[in-house]
Length: 341
Image (tube, rainbow, N blue to C red; front, side, top):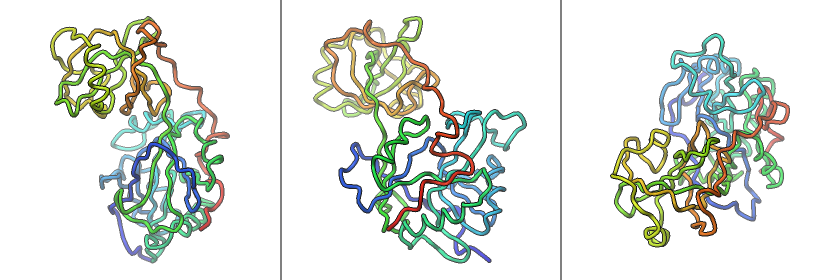
């Protein structure tokens, strides 16, 4: 039995939104988990990343386990779970390009959210609710390495996943839609939970005004300011308001190592340091820094005229991990119920 298509294939992507819609009728709500996008070709035991990179050797354990499903192509997220069963994104990056190694202190799990082909049938033209039902049936007795991303059709159930470490937000999909590659055609939407934070402005990226961003710092436990984030490019209103409040401190220099490579910062960017005098309210998709910085860009909010840098709270450690029993994605567990059309 040969599959009608093989990987790599162009994958569907989700378009970001800032607020959840009030009406979620005819939508499936999936947990947006913190992992690596991965597509599996179970017939050939191959794994490919979002951009078509062959990751079969690196994640040979997942690719080999998928062979037990029979011929199928699955789309989903690759997750790393720590000893408690909590999602740990950084552990994926520790997996050697050569594949699994003895002594790894994490477990790799593939959490599927779509089924593109099964046996000789191309399922991509079928509506989401049919593909989801086939996916859950396929994974009902799958190896523990293979599971599903949970899905629901009501907001209270979906929002209940958010306190779990590793769940960043929700992905919204029309239950009657076919699988289409790209952001526009797919119709998928992604919403990230944003956490309000107060951070200290310590620099401005040395780019043209239309793309300038702010470099932000937070006190560590010793009270020293440490750069932890870069904002998205700030708008003209905030730029006009904040410019008179910022006073240069030295010359343009390379961005601090802690924020090099972050969205909005560039990999070898430059910035102008300023005196740490202004506190800015931002919204981040992480409640706490990861390895001393926020992995994604933060959205600039209002200037906190009522605060000084001394009022900014120091870094907090990550939230306590939940066990696999309470996590929304755990080895061998399928999502909560088939999504209906």
